[in-house]
Image (cartoon, rainbow, N blue to C red):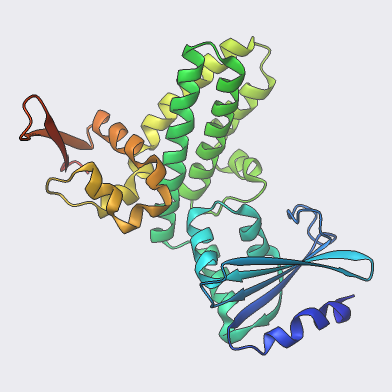
Length: 289
């Protein structure tokens, strides 16, 4: 079959914009997410205006999904971690074309997981953890237990990914298997939520208490990227939002800043405005950071 598949991509390998081509076969990688296709061809190119395109074929009776991914989007995925199937493809796919060892460099980057990449990914996961935790806790207080359960389950997943990244690994599709070995206490929280014989309300209540402690203990590592890029002098919320480095977690940045104020990582001052009774809030990075 591989010889037939080669007809789909061999001409594209000669194009200047093509950087690499990979094959992912469901039969060889049963845990890979292929969205119903039995074979995925992943082509990475350097045309930023064409972020992600997909074409479907049938080859020897099997459905083949041909993905065209820009180099720019691939790097974004590596940092944001919002497309785990792509990371899985990059890690486990078979390289059939690699211009100037481009993909080998990417695989080395994933394996070595540079501290800068790790720091940003931890802050992305931490802000998502904060969001799910705060919303889950609010829903619980208003007795929406099923919705609270759903949000706390998501919060646990973000806590799991944060833990894996903190230990220097990329989160895999089977992230809980990683957590079971890396951070057993977090894995235990997951088990208790799923298997406990306590009533649902009690399970959620206990999980909220445990997650609150986890959020507190992870604040320093989880906010490291943000705290490393902001100025020591006075800054407004608008200044923080406009910083190019926060793009991947800007949607939850306001919640992160509020959390850091509560935990003493940031302090605030009020500045008078022309309107009586209205002050503008400015933020300062505390020296303890």
